[in-house]
Length: 250
Image 1 (spheres, rainbow, N blue to C red):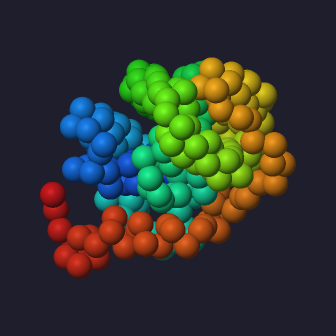
Image 2: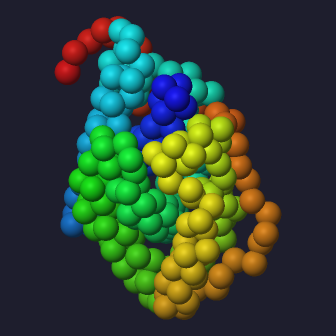
């Protein structure tokens, strides 16, 4: 169970780590000062959540690794995040679309994780859900604002949703660790979240006057460590300080 729990935690935390790094890239580049600050705060929220998960993972591992080691010093194939969160900030619509499609899942997931028999995971979920509730409102409002805005903003928002849609189904795939933790009543059975997720997403897209993508072709692999080319570039930035100055302390 120890190995499965460790890998299960990585599967949760890596999503927030990679998305936090990705949206943090907008710091100083947002479309307005208010939005720039909001995106930066979301990034900080996600990275703060990651600390709680990785501290717990380090404790479970029981070796010399710290939370920084787990976060910064793994190789690309050792990261378990879904492909959705590593997609680049092609433009602001892509940033919002990616955030929205993950936020709806993240909020539903944390609501269920609060019921975990693992008291540490339950406590982390209880703390994080307040922040993620704001994230979901923020990204949802922007999807509606862009989708029901100008001709250009609608076109860009629709293009972003169309392109990112292919990565949504992976959210509900189960790894070996996922299945093991569900049996122990520690983890969340994500397969049961799928119906509600797509209903909530589709309802919001309709409110934003956007079309629901009809594509049934989905990409997966991130949960098993098989990533897109984008993750390698992201990690080169994320890990630079730790690899350039080994054993540095913040």
